[in-house]
Image (cartoon, rainbow over the protein chains, first blue to last red):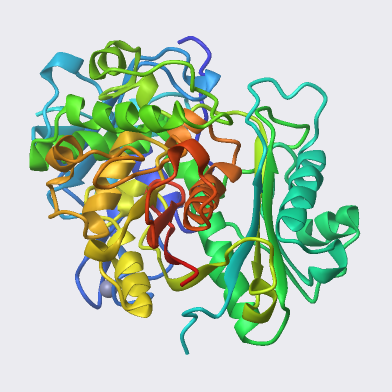
Length: 133
Length: 385
Ligand SMILES: [Zn+2]
C-alpha cells in the first residue's frame, strides 16, 4: 500500500465511536433517545430537541444520492488526483453525509440508490464511502 | 426597534482589483481605501468613531479590529470584526446603523481588503470541517456550489445555459465599469459553457476570480449624512439569517435562508420585491444569483433559470442586476468582493454610476452571502428623497 497523503480525521471524544465503528466496517450513528431522530455528524446534543441522550446505533448503510459533483480541479493540491466524485448522500434513516462515491461519472444520477463501503485508507483510519447499490 | 433610515451610506470607495499584488499588504490596502471612503464622505478621520473590519485571509490574526484601528490612527468608540464571509459587508452596514441608533457612535468606517495570496499564517479550518469534510475533498467553496447547482437542475430543470446567462448579462455591465477585472470583451453563453469544467456542472467562467483589492463605506448618522457632499443612501431595511455552516447539513440545498433574511429586510423597509429598481445579489457563482433571486421573492421558487433568460439584467434592462459586473466580472478580493455589491448599490442610488447609471433608481436590494449559502444578510437601500 502506497503512502496516503490526504487529510485524515482527528477524532474527538464526541466522534470517536463513529470512527471506531468504521474501522470495524460498521456504520453507526447517534440516535436521540428523546425524539428518536438519527444524527450526523456526531454531536454533543440533539440538534432538534437539544437532548444530551444520544445513543450509538447501527444503521443500514443504504442511501440515495441527494447531490453530487465530479471535481475535475480541486481547490487543494492534497486532491491533485482529481477527478473524484464528492457527494451528499441521504441515509435511509434520514441524515445526510458528505462522502465520496466510487462510480463512473457517466453513471451518476441524483436519486440513485447507493450503499456504504469502508475504505481502509491507512492502518489506523477507515473512511466511510459509498458505491452504487 | 427598527433601523429604517437610522443611518445612511455617505461615502464609498473601492480599489481596482489586481491579479498580482506585488509587495502590497492587506493593511496598506485597508489604509488606502479607508482614506478614499472618508474623503468621499466629506469627513476627516477624527470624525469616524466606529470601525468594522474584515480579517484578511492573507494576514489572519487575533484582535484584528484594534490592530487596524491602531494602524489607521483611529480611536473608535465601537469596533469589531464581522466574520460572515461574503455576507460580512452587508452585515457591517446594519451593525453600524444599530450602533449609531443605540448612540454608541455617529460615523462608522466599514472596511475590508485582501491579497490574492496566502501569508505566513493560514486561516485555520475549524475541527469539524477538518474531520468530516476535508478527508473527502470537500474543501473551498467550489464543491458546495456545484452540489447546489446539480440539485437545482434535478429539482427544477435549471439548465447550464440559464446559469451561464448570469455571467453573460453581468459581463455586459462590466464593460461599462473601468474598475472591473474583466471588462475588455462581452461573453456569450457558448463561451461560458465551452470554458473548462472545474466542478461539474460549474465552468470556469461561472466561478469568481480571486484577486487583490479593497472596498469601504462610511455609514453615518442622519445629521452627518445630510451635510455630506453626495446624496445619502439610506438603510431602509435589513435582515439576517443562518441555518447551516456546511451545505451538506442545510435543511435544503436549493432553498436558502435568503428567504428569511430578505423577508425581514423587506418588512422593515415596508417594501416588496416589485418596488425594487436594482438588485445586487452576491454572485460567487452563477447559481448563487439564481437561488438568491428566487428566495428573495423576485420570482417563484425554481423559476430562477427561466427568469434570468426572460429579463434583461443589464444596467439598461428591466431588472438591473449587479451593474458593476458582479464579482464574476469585477473580481473577488476576499471579503471586499462582498462589499462590491454594497458600494455599487450606493453608487447607483447616489447617482454616481456614470456610463452604467440606472435611470430613476430609487430602491436597491443587496444580498450578502457567506460560505456555502450559509450566512445571509439582505439590505434594502433608498435614494435620498
Ligand atoms: Zn432529539
